[in-house]
Each structure stands twice: as C-alpha cells, then as structure tokens.
Amino acid sequence: MRTVSFLGLVLLLAGCEGTSGPEAQFDPVAVRQPLNLARTLGPTLTLAGVDDTFQLRLAFDGATGRTIFTTPTDDTVLVARVFQFRGLYYFVENGTHGADWVHAAHIGHGQVQGLGTGYEQMRALSEQTRNGAFSELVRFRSAANDSLRLRFDRRQLRSFYAAQLDSLPIYRLLGAERPTAPAEVPAPPAAPVLGPYPNPAQQQTTLDFPTAANRLVTLYNNQGHAIRTVPAPDARLTFSVADLPAGNYVVRISGADAGAAPLVRRLLVQR
Image (tube, rainbow, N blue to C red; front, side, top):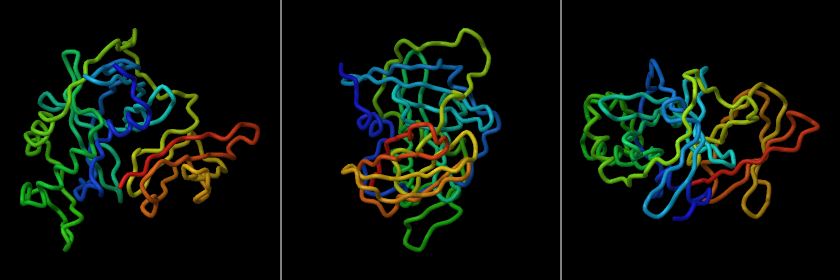
C-alpha cells in the first residue's frame, strides 16, 4: 500500500468530483452535545484502504464543540461538530453565507466509511432536491434552481445518508492511539492557526487564530506570484476564493510576532 500525498488526501476527504459547488445547504444546524471524536477514536488514526493509507490527527475544541482533523504536516482537512443518530455519525461543517453542510459516516468494528465526504454527499442531496425530493424541507429555492436552503431533519434524511454510504469505500482503522484518561482532548495549544477550512474551497475559506493581532495574509499561486494580501486583525478571517481558478495555492501568514517566521499553509481551490 502507498501513503497518499496531501493533495490526494484532500481530494479523498472532500470527494470533489464535480465542476461546481453543491446547490443545497442547510439552515444552521444545532448540535446540543457535540461528540469528542478525539476521545472516542484517539488523537491519531491510520486509515487503510485497498490502494492507499493515510494518517490523521484529531483534537477537540471544547469552546466550539468542533473536532479538528489534521494531517501529520498540520494541514487542516476537516473541522466539524459531530453527533450520532441511529448508528451513523453526522459531521456538521460550516458552509457559505451562514449555512451548514452535513455528511454522515459509519464508524465502528474497526472500520470507517464516508469520513470527510461532505462535498460528495451534499452534491447528491442537491441533485435529489432539484428533482423533487425533500420538498417539505426546502425553505428557499432560487428561480434558476441553483441555490437551495433546507431545514435539517435527521429522521427524514437518515435513509438518504445511509444510501450514500453504501457506495463509498471502506477503510480499516489501524493503530488508533486511544487516550489513557477520559479527560477532554483540547485543541493543541501551540497551534498558531487553524485552517484554511474548508479545504478544498470553492466560494470562501476561513482561518482561525488564537487571539486577535495585526496579521497579513497573502495568497500565492503555484508559480509563486502573490494574488492578494488581506489584513487579518481579528481572531478569525474569512476570505473569498470565488474568483480564483481551480488549482493549488499557498497561504502565507505574517505579522503576529515580528521575530517569528511567517506561517505557510496550503489551499486547494476546486471548481
């Protein structure tokens, strides 16, 4: 088996195969008691498929209830609030314009199926909704049928998500490092930045910082040319990538500590 590259990992986790973003999104989804998957699964995972193997690190941010999935090179690949319902784990991610994405996964018996396939599952939901399914959940539909807002109902949507998982590959869960104590696993305190997420991005992406500070965020294309520079004085920066061609980009973060080297993160823009 081979170990997938970062780009391969991102494409695998995001399931991005189409040329446009999912038309359907959910109104904000309330998760009353988000699960701490870093406690459930352990802080490190190795997932083995038929042709590939990859590693993930998990941390839980108790302040937001989000489980954060990163690669060993600190690339953030998934940030989600997680809950369980009737045998499925549901991952609630930030979408665009204040909406949410939700995808489901099977986790158990040493196997994982569907983790990180939010893009693929939301595309399938969009197609079915355009064709008349879930009409009772639709709150808004644009005249061109290219923007849909739905109310999330876990009971009504459970069969949809279960059907989606039937077509997704199964990965064996290897060598999970389980925590020795039941205490909450916090987000790594040394992490200077969380994100960008979502990654791949289509419309916008977000960076989270530990504190507000005078920072500059510069986006470079894969030829090393600066595309734009954005000030980031607050603890969170969300910026648009809607006008960018599909491809790989580098995000450079500087200025929080004059004596520190700039931070560099990778970003994939998908169309």
